[in-house]
Length: 54
Image 1 (cartoon, helix red, strand yellow):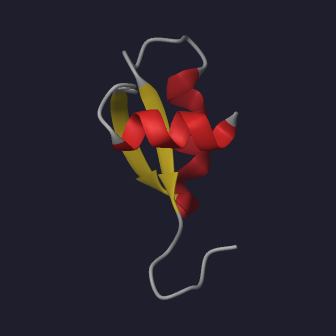
Image 2 (cartoon, rainbow, N blue to C red):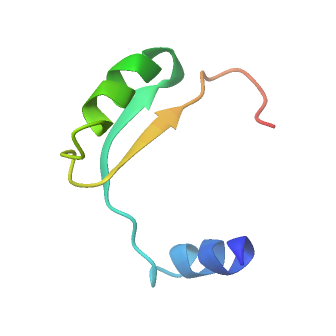
């Protein structure tokens, strides 16, 4: 099912609104913003650059 979501998102069929992106070291700030459910989209945490993703 995850592959199907990825395919739909890649094709532009499934659009996920992103309210803000935060570097991973600002996770507390992102969590505080998401609590009242007011961002108007998903919050995305971005891992630091220069590291390999797992």
